[in-house]
Length: 330
Length: 275
Image (cartoon, rainbow over all chains, first blue to last red; front, side):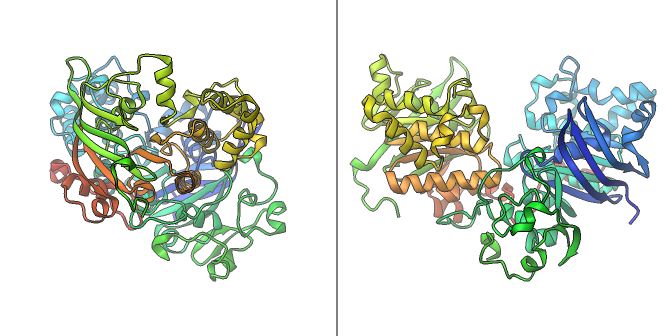
């Protein structure tokens, strides 16, 4: 595989506090990869490392390659050109748009900078807004950000990013703050545009079902490490890591009321609170002695690239009695 | 399953033709009627602007109704409480659990002290307060060691359990849970939902569960009220509303909820426009 983005053993400390350890995975051109985890898993920092949008006092190890060039060691002068290949969408569009300029002025900023034909750019912007589900783009472009709802503004943000035809879309919880019906709409429309243009995507989300619906492959993170990487089909139907199993099972099903929802005991831990072994060891229902002391090697088991001492037993179904199982796959 | 008898005595909340309008602005709650019975859960479901939190605020005494009735334990609450004594009596009947307990817990006060304060307000004699605090912590699955901590030393899920414990301090008939599990990580959300279901079985407390998450609704609710723009579009038992929805908006909400084998669908008419 000729990777577009390639994380090679990325480690990150912020002010001496460990955030990420040994993060490795790749995104192929046009591929959509979901980076899934709970609070403190390090998923957002992993995404930000690719654009080198890390906080002050960050110290990194390893490499994060975009098209073969390491982002982490790139001279400052070349960062801007590097970021041009990336389109970024975050949870809160209001934090990313200048409130004193109209939506139209925001959308045409790039064309003004590069001296492109403004009428052309305006036409492209209108058509893009329309395709993102905005029915009256001309009127919206004359409005200010505060006049638009969060859902409309996020449609504008995504349109503005995809207009520039980036090679990789970096999306950090882009629909988490939206109503469910808007979320579904935005994901469907953005997905259509993305696939048409052959744009790859790295999507950060806490919602494994959502990631499965819009991604080709899933990277599951916990406590600053990647625990499992697999195709969406494998993750949804036969996850191998006990944490992935727990994550799937604890999502309340729509179809039936359960007497007790299967849970992972305890609360998510940050990388700084984990020991030398598997970061999930303290919460894992099938952990054995070595799990807390010895980090499992990453290996392929039943189609998944997984870090777990007991992966073979999980994949063979030998530990099913002790592991939470999702209602729908029961 | 939880309401074999459906006599009038069982009704804890009765909302009738409730209307709320802020000043001369738009009507945000428009002729809403529903009931919540003892030992059962009614879910108010909808998206932004549905009016669900406003209804919770009126029932909690944080807002007055424009017209209609909001009766809790036989007392009409459509007018805000007039005296501290009124407020205290109402607090003994209904408590609100907000989305983020950070905004209601004193950051410098230890959890034990916060709970004891709530217990004292509920009229428990001083000698019995400590035991009641321990009992409340136990009810929500926390230990006495948590009592010595301040809110920021707890995780989000633990803080939400504290908020639930505090709401239970006065042994209220009903809890209004306003997006109370929405901000939690899924693995923690499941724990809190299990705690709430167990508490209802053990204590008989009724819940008015305000949420936008239909998966959560399925796990807690007996009855569902679907709201859009302040108007009820559909209401009934959870099996009927989620299993055989009658209104197209309920179907749209269901179709938009991520689940296994889900595919996001656009309902915008512009989707097929050529680039």
